[in-house]
Image (cartoon, rainbow, N blue to C red; front, side, top):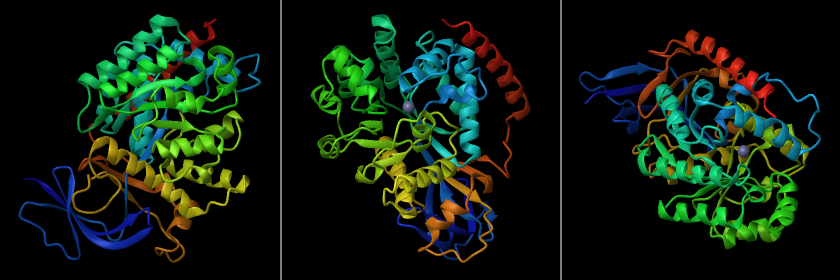
Amino acid sequence: MSSILLKNATAVHLFPPTIERVDLRIQSGQIVARGQELIPEPNEQVEELNGRFVLPGLVNAHTHLYSALARGMPWPQDAPKNFFEILQKVWWKLDRALDEESIYYSALIGALEAVKAGTTTLIDHHASPNHIAGSLKIIREALEQIGVRGVLCYEVTDRNGENGRDLGLRENQIFLENHTNAQFRGLVGAHASFTLSDHALRACAELARQYDCGVHIHLAEDHCDAEISRRDYGRSDIVKRLAEMEMLSAKTILAHGIYLSEDDLRLIKQRRCWLMHNARSNMNNGVGYAPAQNFGERVSLGTDGFPADMFEETRLAFFKGCDAKNGLGPRDYLKFLNGGHQLCSELFGATLGKISPGAVADLIFLDYPAPTPLTNENLAGHFLFGMKSEHVNDVMIAGKFVLRQKKWPGIAMENIYQKSREVAAKLWERLRNMP
Ligand SMILES: [Zn+2]
């Protein structure tokens, strides 16, 4: 059996933060040995790391790959004035303009940029109302080409009528039925309380029960979630509403969570749901400060459609927290990143985020020239103020190098970017003509 011996790695655990000089043996996609002075086996590939940093591959725990081709896209003439208008005038137009080709290239570019930045697992939330059937399979194929791990779902909503809602449910079901394996997992995607009728919420919860998975939904991203839910469905208590629809479980992912009361947070913690903090997106949309310091133990970070650079995301979340005087320190943010590993360990039924025997070999290799001493105590400081995605040179996913010295073995990168620019130009043209 082919195996790789990594000699003299500086192995980094994010939480609790630790560093140690070790050798690691990788076999069949897993770390099988960790120790000092491991002896090479016959025919083993030996890599001398000379103390390079080896970290667990990072997790982007809430994102929208479909926005990867939005970079530089035309902005509405009549600029949006609030979050709901941002959805109406920007994102709900973009998602309607997506076709098979643009779904594929969005996912491909999103996956490439993720891996380049050291992100090895993407938890995606997809919407393409005019191309629903088969969309998750397209995303899966793009992610497979790059080799990144994915947790996929389709966004069920009532905003595109009953037919759109039912096609969305069906798309989740088909993916859960046919397309999950060691590299992919499915969830039931749901937009948010304010675009989901009781009927749709119940159908999502029922599907999640049927496939023993969670629901992935936006929650209290803006005060409009409660306000429109009251106007359209007679309920402003959106957390209770989701609980009554039996959507809140230990497998449920709730994104944003900005406008939550103490009672809401108590209920969410009681049900052991996962809360995603999306600090950069919250700033970008001007929706307010998420009380991440009160989110509890089951928390992680997501870029919500921005490129999956979790070094940058973590840094921005930290600064946003300082600005909000939320009392969190650098270590707390590494704990959030580690939450993504814990969540994925639960989703995949495997150990992610550990550099120890039995863990999956999703590893990133950094050439980080530390200008000051680096210890267990100050690792979080180095992570936030020094380490960057540009230090990521190699990426291994499931024991296989997908990025080597910043190069992609077997992938013609120039062609992909050339083609994605063409696909994006066509997408924007459709977007300009969208009513
Ligand atoms: Zn989102």
